[in-house]
Amino acid sequence: MGQISIGGQAPDFELPDLQGRSHRLSDALLRGPVALVFYKASCPTCQFTFPYIQKIFSQVGRTAGWTLWGVSEDDVEETREFAEQHGITFDLLIDEHPYPVSAAYGLQFVPAMFLIQPDGTISLSEYGFTKAGLNHVAGFKLLTANDGLPATRPG
Image (cartoon, rainbow, N blue to C red; front, top):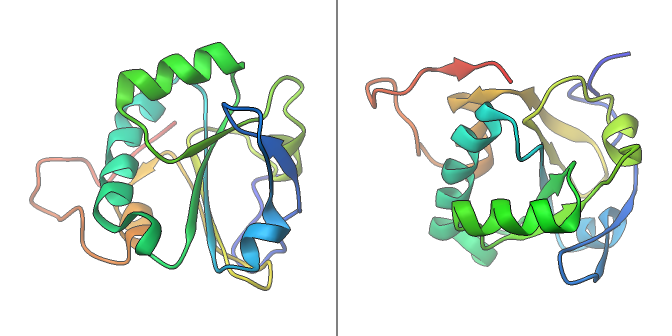
């Protein structure tokens, strides 16, 4: 089994954030689409990708009409350090070992990015750094062909 594909149904889940508050996917979908970006702090491609995700959030933030969650495969302390190091201001949820939510989404690589529509259908399913995926989530051309960045970078 691989990562859930476009057109698949997103498994519902509930995870805590850094403050211990619980977040449920089905509740967030009532407000609109949800972008999930799974990561591990020690992953170099995750470290490369997250500043661009933060840039998207900084530009469209809570007015985007969607919810953005980072889903950490680390403990609370590692997640907090990653957030501070990369200036992350959106919610980071904790999916600790044995990573039940990551497993439910069929992850084999991180970063992994999903865009989930309010009906629970996955409209974006990518892994690694991809300009196309980041631009899709942003809803605008954040990254361009001649910006000096690779089109993709494996996780």
